Image (tube, rainbow, N blue to C red):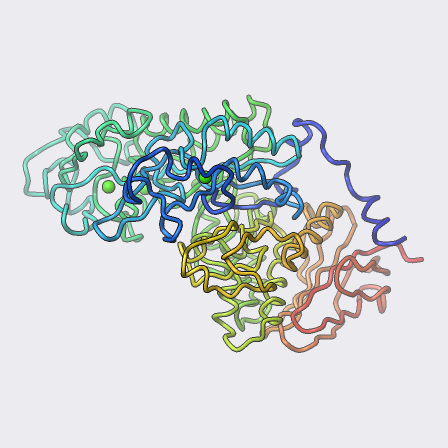
Length: 597
Ligand SMILES: [Ca+2]
Ligand SMILES: [Ca+2]
Ligand SMILES: [Ca+2]
């Protein structure tokens, strides 16, 4: 049987109804993640968000990487063919809520183009379009069988609240020990908040006694911004921690302001109830399919223990049985030591798989041996739910915060030829599309975008850019530049993703199968993993080294013959339980066991 015939036999029929789309479990999806401001501009009329004046008023400056560039929801709708052509079955849309257009100290201003500085949690930011545009997006995506995941934030709002004590200098974190709730300005200060027993007693009665917020700083809302937040309860400083900027350590990790962003008192039942109302409302109104949860590890576990089941119940009531929630728990580790805790204690259903990304970067954009994957996969056991949770966790190789894989490849191998850089980036994507987890492509990676680093440096537009530090980028796998639109369905990385996405759709073992680690080593070289579902084995082999590899790889004793699904595979096992694998430098193969003739 030819490969094409084999694939078409195995392919499930395309979903035709919304119920069929929603019946798909999370691990069946391939996610495409984009920031709408940076994807496609479908309406130049909204580029300034209906605001007047210069960039400090409107937030719009397409020549500056830290301001709005004009992309919007209409543009996203117009490019659904492009997204679907890559094989993506779900879109993670960067935050669309109404933001504070511009914030930051004098000379350091930037805009809320990324969406993470929310003032109104109930409506779409006018730079990105309207609630009607979002409804049209969800409907158009669903009609194609594509799910829509929103990017939500409960940890903080925009930076509106200021403190009298530090209007002209950084507000350093003031701890509960140094600034207890029942004294103003330190242990020797006047008595306030009598009877408030601290933020760990999370009852309405207790928080009713927290009425004076001047324990650490004197918070105030600058003139003109008193009612800027929606819903209105968000304008009350009582619902914020007000202890100054987080250092990302100790108690400040959950209690501190994220670079000035007003950190919500997520221990307070009123805040929990308010957030359940807000985001439950988006489920009710738009029937979206999941949430990516920003800054999840900076919120106390008790909040998630209440919020997650409430959202699941809301989604079920709306007829969405596989509502997918994945938290951003950033980690530098190559295993799940940090991220797993938040599935066990917080009860977050899944987290974005930072350890997977870190392991790919260390091996494909580095010199770590392939045994790094052993530590990664062994630690799947740490998640609540174990391997099944890892299988539903979104994997990625690049993103808008941590930078693109191509950047790290170039940094690690500055003398590598262009074809080697491309092979490494393709190899990382091949790992993501075939190993356990939900592949999550970061917009622009499929066009060979590189960038100069992290954050703003990794947020190039797919439409023509006017940012000097983007225009001088040398892209991978193409002669194109950022001066033109890059929606090229023939780009080699786009084609790789599309090809492997088809394979993933055709092979349930690649989506739902277990994993057996077959071969790994202390140096760059062969990584071999079998994915097995109901006795069907698909062998994955990756060569992370610049030399060819040839090795005997263990397989199931019954896997006697193989079809080449990608790369090149031996047609037959050498003996029951062993197959010869031969791989050129920096390449991969996918071999599906078939009945021996
Ligand atoms: Ca626009
Ligand atoms: Ca603030
Ligand atoms: Ca927090």
